[in-house]
Length: 535
Image (tube, rainbow, N blue to C red; front, side, top):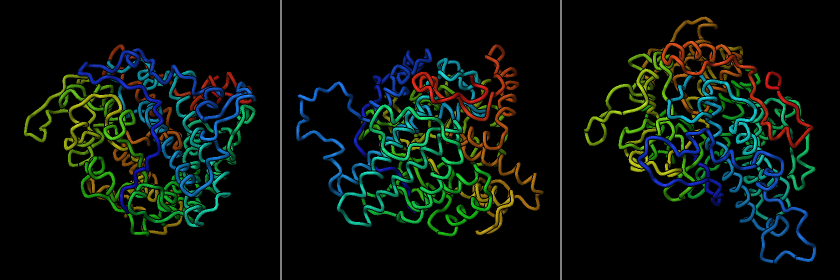
């Protein structure tokens, strides 16, 4: 299957842009730990309502709405309106993976060491000493519910449009997939969350209580089962990049895996494997090349960013992760790869040195050796994964949100490792052995295949390869949480920090395998309760 980047909707314009700079650190607001998003009220009920585009009761009934103003009542009329509406859901998905998500999924893990130049918010997340008031909680929560409400609007309103039934079903199933993905991120982060199945059009509709996880998962599974059955297997032309039936099955496998429904997880992953539409790329580094994003046979679902054609809507994970002054002074260098993680890569592993990280001089495309100046080497190797030396913006500019590296949500290596894990834990094999699936990933990486391992040893091998394969891809925190070893991993990071950076803030024990609900939500909605350990 060709690479699946999300189709474009209109630019939201909610990001703040910064002037191109060669300074050695991010904007002052970030250095002080006050990310611009924290100054918004998007995480409160009122702010959430405004972000969803609802009007307030203060408009006078004497001021009739102009006939040319789009409202839900006069918008959902044609098939073009239906497609535009679901494109708007994709557009919000872009922002849900933009910044707060990887603060949680990667910064707050044992994979990443916060460099001195990282703001105080980054250090709190990296050291796991954050509280419910930290902005990434509200960012992830608010972004997910904006996706959900947009998807609910599509599901509520598109069925009434007179249009081609095949196109209508496709639009509805796209909305189901995107809603399911948003709810999946919510339940993995927070556990019980409010379950909203229809468009919210009033303040009272947001003052809801938390719904048990089992009920939320029932909606997620139902949405994905319908999407898997009803979505196309592929697209052509301008529609390339929309979610497919394969993407729905891959996400369904991850949902089942998280629930420890091993047989269902193996079946869903096995369906992707036997479809013959996806394959591993030969070269690990090619997965992250900008030029191959649309044609990448390994990518199953990815978020499209293009800061050149759509200024202000580019990605930032490259800008934050790549080292400062290397090459061309293009990034902020806010993090390093933990030395303990770097040590897990065999010298022959093509995913390690010069792919995920670098600890020596780098020979660029011009044949010049370039060295980075910061952060200190003792904090760990410099991050390299998203460096694309064939892309000018990626190499030579620090313009805020001007990078074009996509964010891959699901790829085939993940499907193979999910299948291997599920079958090893007792799931029925439907697409070959667990060993064969794991070895496809290992052989691509240039390391020897496994053979004859016990169940426990095979489990350890899968977990190790998931860590090495998906560094800074939004996977680590969720894996640690579902395996129940998050606290163990972060306590080990405490020891590592004390050894490599004396005086660095000590990592605290993890209060829970869940995150705290954002405090602003609790402040305005007294029907919500905080997760244990975070009160």
